[in-house]
Image (cartoon, rainbow, N blue to C red; front, side, top):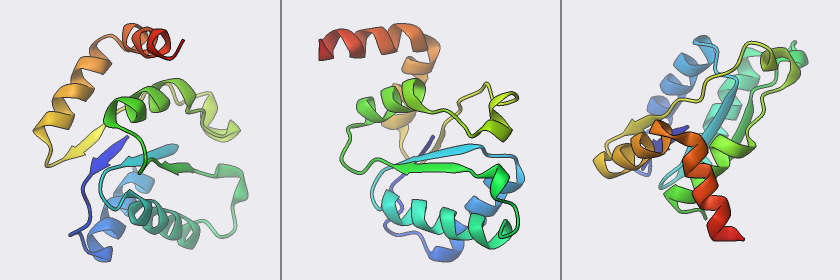
Length: 126
């Protein structure tokens, strides 16, 4: 999960973060915050540029501009499944929050009891 109001970030800054995440083994990137569509697109561009010959290790990416933070957290916890190459070894969801104490707090609360958080969201939707 990447929570970042990136509307003031340069393409270079976004590309540098994308490169670090790709090099660290990112298997699925979910973006939320102002200009998350651009962050998603820059990440995809950087990924494609570095993996032109290997379609077996696709990194899934999504952006969630229309979701609340709560909806985004729920979606990430409940609906992300990496591609087959990463599926066996990918068992961790983690969040990167850039410059948002409020988002950090909400994510920490959800991650403290992810099953409980998801149950509450599902009860609200039913």
